[in-house]
Length: 178
Image (cartoon, rainbow, N blue to C red; front, side, top):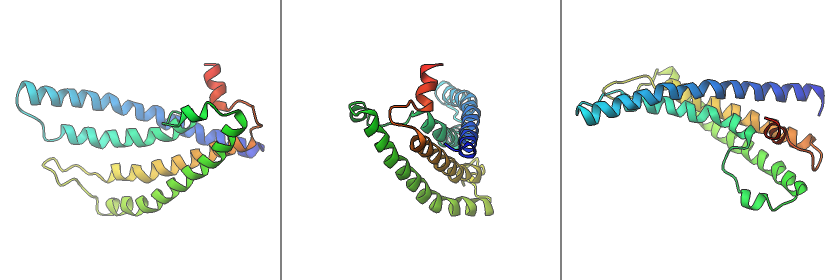
C-alpha cells in the first residue's frame, strides 16, 4: 500500500475509533435516565415526559456512530458459517465484493438522508411532544455516520486490495496480539 494511502487509512480508522470510544459514554447517560424513568413509572406511578424520548435521542447516535469502527473490527453480523469454510483467497474475493456493496449502500442512504438532516437543521425541528426537544442533532447523526461508514468501508477495501492472499488483516493481527 502506498505510504499516503496507509496514512489516510490509519487516520480514518483512528477517527472512527475515537468517535466509537466517545459514543460509548452516551450509555452512561442513557442507563441512569432509563433507571430513573422505570422507578418513577412503576414505583411512584409518575412517569416523566422526557425520559424515554431522551433515551431514544441518545441511543440513535450511539448506535449509528459506533458502526464504522465496528466495521473495522468485523463486528457486524455476517455469514461466518459460509465464510469460515472458504480458504483465504475466496474470503479476500468476498471482501473485494462486499466492501463496494457497503459503500454503494452508504452512498445511496447518504444521498437521501443528507437533505432530510439539512431540512431538520434549517427548521430547528423538534419532536412536538410534551417535552419538545430538538431532534435535528439526532437527525444530523445519520448522514455523519453514513459518511464515516462509507470512508471506513473504503479503508477496509483498500486494506484487502493491497493485502496479499493469506496475509492477516490488521483486525486479525490486533486480535491475535491484544
